[in-house]
Length: 283
Image (tube, rainbow, N blue to C red; front, top):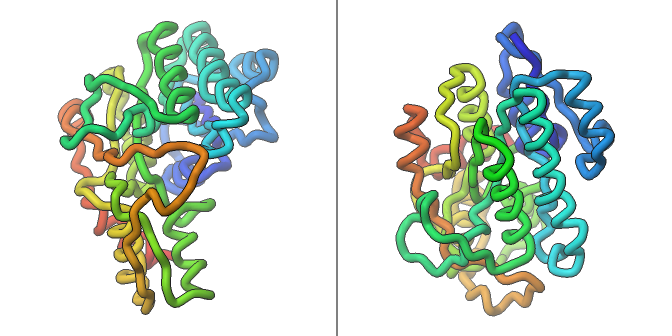
């Protein structure tokens, strides 16, 4: 028995975790939103650890406004690097295992083969760099951690690409979607199950992992599949990313290699279209 604190517990992945958790388990989960904990505060963070004495800390909190981060550097690094270092330091003090969610944006997107955990990182934007710095802080401070890099998260919860597409379908009959950025959509409910499985089985297989659903897709493929499963008659036109001017550069290739996590944790990962269909039907 023990407490598990979920930081960023009111966000998309936090809500998915809350839905997936079965009552009567071996752990008590405490979901903390930004109103419950300002992770940039040393005092508040220490008070939370002292109050709950957690055996696990799941950090879903992050500064994720990719374009805004290019100008709001202080806030991005405050949340994605320095607050993460503070979490790691408290985890070390309280003998807490840290499960930290990171991103495919730590890579530059120049690869043409699935990205392994040992591949050189080279972020192309502030968001990716701040998340990479957070990973490095954890690795320098402690050993009992799981860093899980993921990509293109969506679910029935919060705001995400799938819900945006379905909302746009209510007012439009035609959309242009980028075709030259390739990765894998990840159903946050699937990722939540993996995290809960780690806590339930306590494998002590600490380290850095990649997790996304199986398969490969462009944003164009992703959008087409959303409308296919929703049975929405929408004309989707492929367009190059150069047609969209954004403050932050995005990696063109973000397919994650999941060999390590499948081997270490003995899990099977669903194909992205199968998981997307489940989500769309729920919506």
